[in-house]
Length: 89
Image (cartoon, rainbow, N blue to C red; front, side):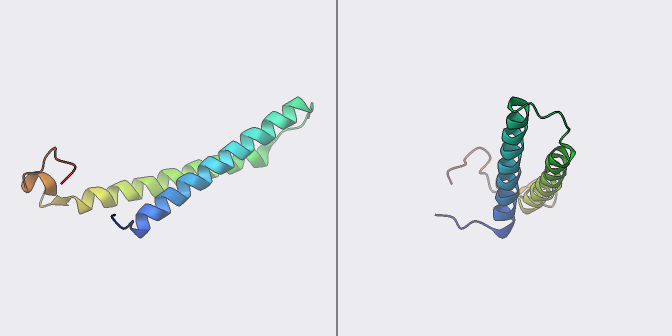
């Protein structure tokens, strides 16, 4: 089994945190509607927005790192080795 890198774990952690917080905010918002809450929930919507922004930054950095690791001299490393479509190798 292949060992996961720190960047992979960070990306998964940020995605998981974002997913859990978004589901929690949706649950609390639904509960507020069901109980007839007449106010607004700006802190909850700000939380979701901030987490979505951080997820975008982390994933962009992760995919740039991944692209840099799989490229050497402008040529995709796997295609240079002749493993273009062979993902099992």
